[in-house]
Image (tube, rainbow, N blue to C red; front, side, top):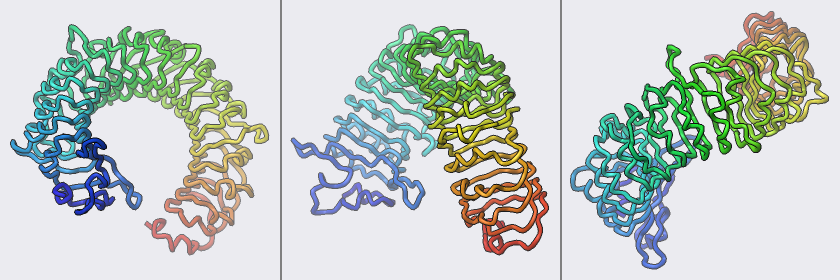
Amino acid sequence: MAFKSGVTYDPAGRLVSWRRGVDCCRWRGVRCSNRTGHVVELRFGYTELIDGEQYPYMEGDVSPSLFSLEHLEHLDLGETSLSIPGGRYNSKLWGSLKSLRYLNLSGTILLDGDKMLPQLGNLSKLQYLDISYASYMNPSVKPTDLSWLTRLPLLHHLDLSWVNLTMVHDWPHTVNMIPSLQALHLSACSLQNANQRLPHLNLTKLEWLDLSMNDFDHPSESCWFWNLTSLKYLNLGSTFLYGQFPSMLGEMMSLQFFDFSENMHLDGHGGGVIAPRLLRNLCNLEVLNLAKGLSYGNMTELYGSLPHCSSSKLQRLDLHKNNITGTLPAGIVQFTSLAILDLSNNHLAGYVPSEIGTLSNLIFLNLGYNKFTGIITEEHFCNLTALKHIDLSNNFLRIVVDPDRLPPLKLEIASFASCQMGPGFPAWLQRMSGVYIIDMSNTGITGPFPYWFCATLSLAKGLDMSDNQINGSLPKNMEIMSLGYLSLDRNQIVGEIPTLPRNLTDFSISNNDLSGQVPGSICKSRELLR
């Protein structure tokens, strides 16, 4: 009950069941041993949705009485915003929890973290430790030494993300002394570099390494971790590593996830360089994210560097914003498991191969902001029945689709801006009745709105048809639509504005030839009058 008295904010009512006279083993979040009856588990670490907003699960101070639970094995206070007691005495109390195997303090407020953290080294049975966001919640937490971690011989999961480790320079040597580690999270730790030399790697069990959002800014090939062939997950996003990837990357046969995104500086320098055929043997690779991570590239050469295995597992390929030149090889369709393909914001030219329509698992396709030419037909969509997001905008493409041969589409977001879709309203749009957001601005559409327009797009939340040659009047039944955003600027629309969708908050129809009075529905909308 002392623990409950320290909690000042419990919007989800997690502690409502904590009442005197009720067996504590029946309290919510508490688990006791069936054999001894001792409390062995306390779980409070998650957030709940209240009125559509995400709130911390609890707030307040953790009572020192918690440390009397000497048989406690599992303690989860993650994301609660609870304050962990400080002071020399309270910090030393952590050593009393000798049975603790799982400890999650993510998102809690460590009032005296620099004194408390070394005490965790006395928890010799600890297997899982998460103190992420400690410096975010309390900026004064800036450890100068991590050697206490080496006293945790069973530790297999360590998360120090968003803990300020600016003053810790020998961190690779420290973690290398924990051979039991399987997962290491060091994202956004203000680490200075990763080019230390380790004569012998002990981390033979490490499968997960996240070093993202640390400003290393040195050649990638000098990093210490490339010989970790056990890795399945490697995140180097936003580390500003640069230069040639070492050949050892091509020997990480277990790798399933590789992220080297966002490593280009604002002035354009930096980025990685992939040698030909480097990744060809990484047959287990499922996610390859190099977005804004390469200094340059030719699509044909990059394609040759990708895994060419008989049963490719690649599900996500992200190469956007890399100044990639060349054409899109039709062989890209050998990656039959692809769900996400993003090649946007490059300098790709030539035709979009119709074979791309065979990627039946594709959910997200973005080819926008390139220099593609030619015609997009129904063949490009023939088996894309899982596709939810497509962006072909700002290319030199013409879209000519036979609606009778177009398969049922599940598109939710579609952008065809600056592609040629006209003249006339494309009849195949009638097959996109489930779309939420659609951009058809500057697409050469002419003529009046078709009779099916409002009914077909009745579920759409956002619609941009500006910079076309749409004429005639607005549909009379627009009020049946669900639009929140509508742009019809720079067309040739005439007549009066009818009753508009009741959810409309952003409406733009400048540079047309409207007449008549402003409808009352606009005057009643506080959002539109802003």
